[in-house]
Image (cartoon, rainbow, N blue to C red; front, top):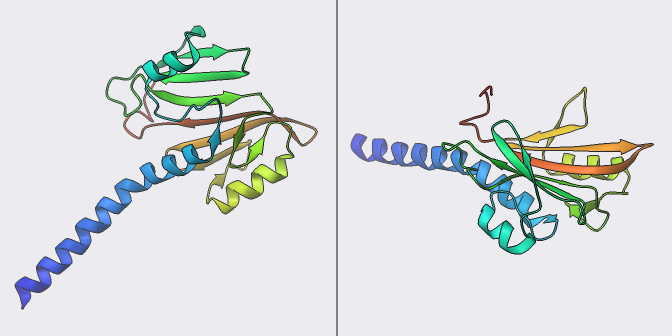
Length: 165
């Protein structure tokens, strides 16, 4: 009986641990399925981006690099950290194009609309900035008179989160 109880307890514990580790993936899947920016998704491989959008303008960075597609109003960031889950994959997406959306909110919409949506999606708001966070995902915006001018979403892998460059 004790052995059976131990096995059941151990199994429940392992399932719980696996579930916790999958929460980051679930958040990314949720964000990607609600992201409408030129078919770009977080953690999309760079070679797929290049085949779909072309080279863009290459921008050197620290810990990564960017590709700007000014005609589309899009800036994509890529990680250069070889031990990151985002190595040579899309780690950030920024748009100033009103035809793009995140969780149904577009550039040109009221900030309050984005705020309401992100609260319902369990994102935490930073008290001092336009930043929302959920696990490894970060969302921010630039605004003018309560209207969104630029939207960005990015992924920071916990493995490299505290790294200084």
